[in-house]
Length: 76
Image (cartoon, rainbow, N blue to C red; front, top):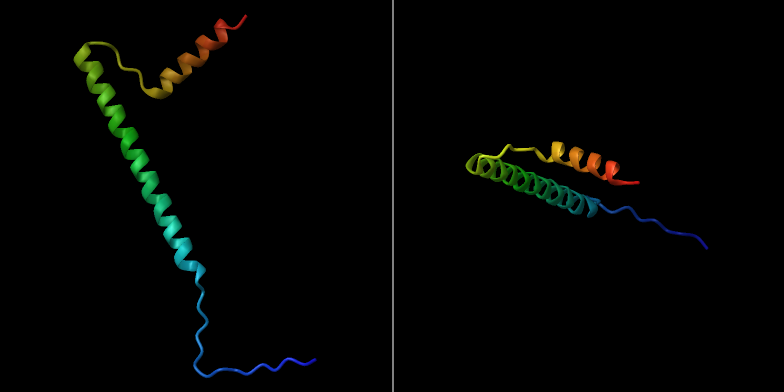
């Protein structure tokens, strides 16, 4: 059995995967920026509430470190 290959004139090969990849990358980037915006707004609200209430503000990283320390000390 032999295969016959006929070249076409002015043919353009289309890669249909590139638009899907760029769309996925765009959604990931937009999602990341929305997530960071929500986190930043939440931190600002917490900081301003702490100022309003007159209590010291602890950033989330510092708070997580203290919670980890307390959990380690609580373990027998």
